[in-house]
Image (cartoon, rainbow, N blue to C red; front, side, top):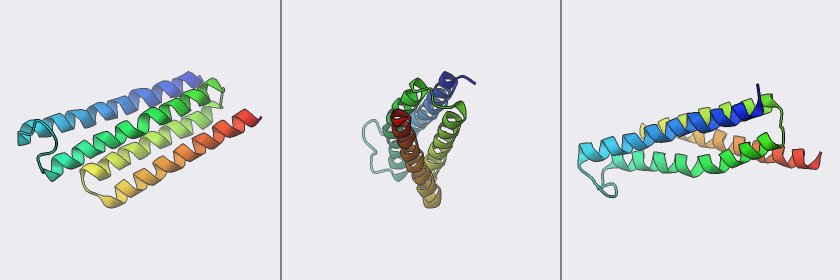
Length: 128
């Protein structure tokens, strides 16, 4: 498959995750009648944080994957990085929303691993 395909997969699936997390925050705001902030509601607080964390992680990783795409990194490498990162973000969001610390920790850990590996692949690509 073409490299741009994997960039598009990253952006599309993670955008849907961001949308789902944002809609969850809106749903909870309506349910608990909280228009600003979290109103001290722990469920809403977790939902807001899960959405914010996803927003914090995706843009930087998308830029890294775009750089790898432009550097013509192998499609299999991009596939592994995109699928792995995306899966780790779903695990992390689940852990945040359902207060499953192990899932949150595993999701965060694998997110960091995929970010480090992607940065190393860029460095190696630039040196060769």
